[in-house]
Length: 241
Image (cartoon, rainbow, N blue to C red; front, side):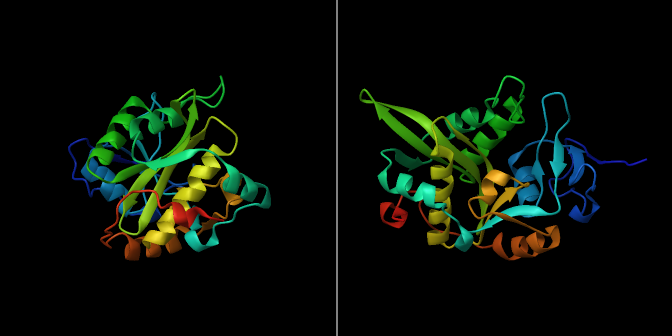
């Protein structure tokens, strides 16, 4: 019988088991319980662990093997996207609508889908954002002199790592526009890696690939402690494709 490590809500933030203890089925399930406090979330990300659960479950913590990542220099822009990137009329900004981006990402993709971004998760990541760890990139469209949010991505930045959490699209290619723009900025600022967590055919088309969890941990160990000093502001000149 398989048992899962249980975290008490008042347990120390660093009480996660070694990620090598994660289950192979379901892939990467490591622990359950605890809370979504900022110290625990930061400790989790620094060790290659992230929360992912539904409203009817306890907090579940994961460290899958293999891990999907984007090496920033391997960003791939399909030919059909290049013309769109040159000609689009959207406005992009960092960190001007973080809560709205997370809420948009939490919307079910169809009537049969639920969401893993619970109210508890929304509150936790908004607190990470308030403390300077979580960031969003928004895609805006102006209609009748009013802006509306049509795409975006958000995640957590620690050292030279960006842990992508989710993205959404309300118009064709706007999530891809957000992803590509984010990757270009991370590369410009000196980041090492964007963590995409789990396998996604959609992200493979943009250059993401899987690597062994052990390799991911090695990269994480060198990238997380680095102190980054840059402003989360859009740099238009790096977007030319």
